Image 1: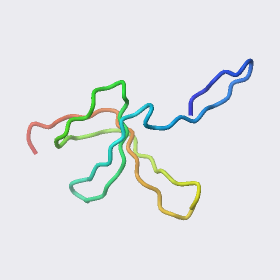
Image 2: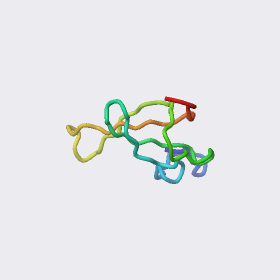
Image 3: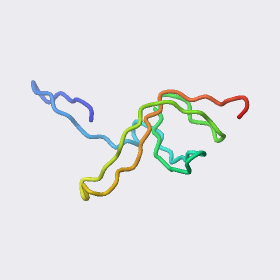
Image 4: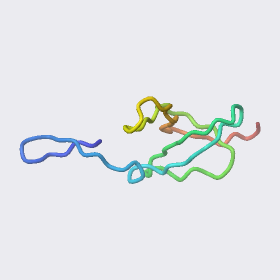
Length: 85
């Protein structure tokens, strides 16, 4: 959500995540768990090779089924391509 001024009142507007972020689905090599990652469009596109990513892990839930397990979401803050594994 982003704040928007409407006259003298401030309101919030929802914007689709893909307008602000490049969105990827990645797999953790150790656990085989998949998760969604969002990387700011202001930054370079992530490389298509093994990388180490750091950020904030969040959980996405749908409004339709509150009992369904949420998907993991990582808001990437930085990444690096290690020289060797």
